[in-house]
Image (cartoon, rainbow, N blue to C red; front, side, top):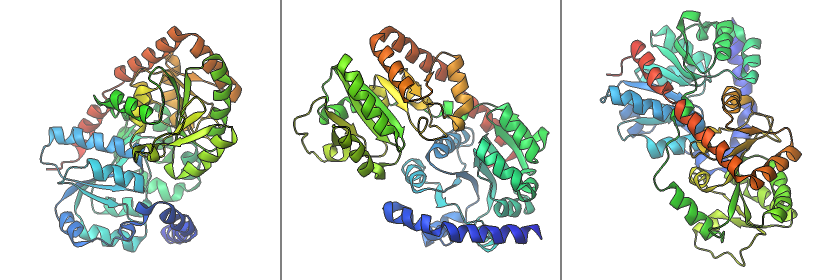
Length: 435
């Protein structure tokens, strides 16, 4: 009876979410591509590829996909002949995987968790196992795999505050499937305790740490790329760059305001904004313009358009994807967004690998353990509000030695925390063979 209830609730939720999906299809041209894969409908090339037994790896979006790709790389180093089926939930994650997956691997959107869709998909593929990256547990999919004796494992597992509340409310549906996770490799003892409460056997849980420390990879041309991007936007080489990375609504306004104040004391300062979603460019332009500053779009610079009268009033807006990492390497001060006006936070590990001074707001719930680690290592500044952010930035500008020490601590902490994925691959290999 409970599965009838679950399927009814899921169907209602799916229908209720359709306006959201349709809006995203309209905003992001790539989002509607292959949408029917969510219903288990594949083209001939995909159907042919799926006939070969594969290890199925699922990631939700970009952050999880980066971990999944690094896991695949590590797994393949041990088992060179392994073949993978990778599923994803978002168009940005799909685009990343499409660029980086080996030609031998197959990429799809995760099927919707309807019983008839899951049956259709499993009739076409023969996975050797399912590797879930961080989380996102679909009961019908996990039930079907476990009923067929197909191992389901979790890597870099994390149960956020919000997810934990939801899973506890719906534990009647999730407890049976979470009990089948083996191994469940998680980031922290808190995640382990939450999974135990939700039904995963204690003997199946491994606390390994955060695999995202293994993901960042500095490219040899990052610094040169950053200099080129800044130069194209009219930013002089002697400028000090304040970069707002992965910013969310409200944060661009705050950064524009404090930039106006800070540059009175440090005229070399320049502001660069990298909104989390490039399609927000119009809203970011409006915030920058309202502050009395002149927006400079990266897309226009990349198209070869010259910046008219570049100067300290110009603010570079990174309205592209795939270039933020390079800009981190060229920044002097970094604020990581979704932490001041929104809850959740964004990944601070990527900028930290470049040994840069990093600041965040009070809301780092999705990276609580990482934030605590950085704070203990003296590798991060966390502020309570916009006023605190301005004060700390002003202090770092006046004390460059302190800023450099903060950056060095960040880089050293990332380097010392790597190795989780190597342990993860070993744990998964004990349970699943992909040969």
